[in-house]
Amino acid sequence: MDKLVIKGKKRLSGSVRVSGSKNATLPIMAACLLTDQPCRIKNIPELSDIKTMASLLAALGTKVEINGKEILIKANDDIGFEAPYEIVSQMRASYYVLGPLLARFGQAKVSLPGGCAIGPRPVDLHLKGMEHLGAQINIEHGYINARASKLTGTEMTLEGIKGPSVGATANVMMAAAKAKGNTVITGAACEPEVVDLANFLGAMGAKIEGAGTPLIKIHGVNELSGCEYEPIPDRIEAGTLAIAAAITGSEIEITGLRLDHMKAVIEQLETMGCKVNAQNDSLRISLARRPAPTEIFTAPYPGFPTDLQAQFMALLTLSTGTSVITENIFEARFLHALELNRMGAKISIKGNSAVIEGVDKLSGAQVMASDLRASAALVLAGLAAEGETEVSRIYHLDRGYENLDVKLAKLGAAIQRVQDE
Image 1 (cartoon, one colour):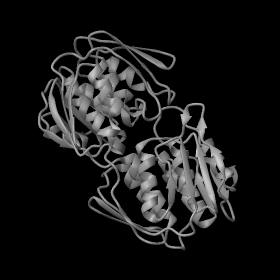
Image 2: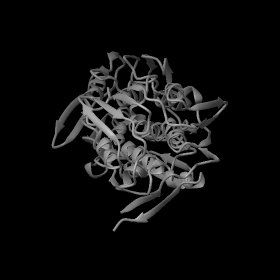
Image 3: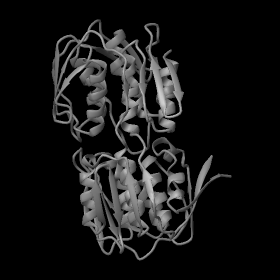
Image 4: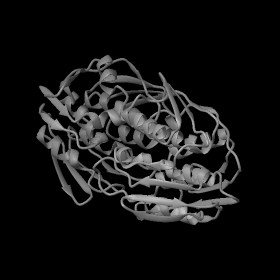
């Protein structure tokens, strides 16, 4: 098992390019099950989650060929419809195959999903959406068994107590693309990754209106075709790299991103004192002093993304005052606070809020990643800390960041991947 060894207090400089979005690519890969024609996806990020989804599609009998940054997927008519526990348990996004399998083959057997240890993320809205389309759902022995002789369009609301569900919106949108008649989703998720999936489905021949708004209309079609497509850049990676510049008091350029996806993040960075120069597809960011304290509330898009909460917490440990982060999306997503405290941070948890009292410095320590975004936060803290930091369990990091250690090293960080004893 690998770990990262970081020698902190190194200034960063230079330019770094953002990889393709993991959270956009995964549902797009699943959507390839909707047709028997080949789909070619370009500029895919080289991540363990992408490999897991490719393994799942292959286990179903789908032809999957990865050639560098491209993946070719072809799902013939004789593929299976059971997504096994041993694969689905590794990654929650495996659940995206439910809608496409049900729409194309009239049945799907999908293990209840796994994923990061960031609290419960129920699949009730996914199942509710499929039932609205006419599927019969039965849960037994840890599997969801779904059947439908023909899916039929209808109106439904997909907003839960925590707000809209990205996963349920995507799953229903894929299923409804081949349903008979029209489907209207109210309370739909507005995230850029949902829009990207809708654009991919549109390239396949689907008829979808309103993606990116709380009201999505899908006009079902009989057949979908193959296509070539390039997913959007990863806005979470872009935000993480921006914090790397800020937490080390450096100036770097981040290229290949979508500025329109970064508004809430840029606003917070500027509030904290960062100088941000945004133009075209690039972002130049610098911070010449300790960050100012702030208050952050995670919220569905276009609000502040929960997937950057941990990284901003790392930056706020070095602020000039007291900050508060309120997590409104996922429960138990503050495990990284305990590890940051091991490095000298002063963070206390009160319900779904974290109170961060800024300190003058962080000290290198041995820390352990609990989930994907927590691992990134610990790496960022290590960049700024005095001495040496060891971050173990970085398989979490490799799920969602393409060669983050390599990219940081090219910017000047003293970071090395070694075998953990």
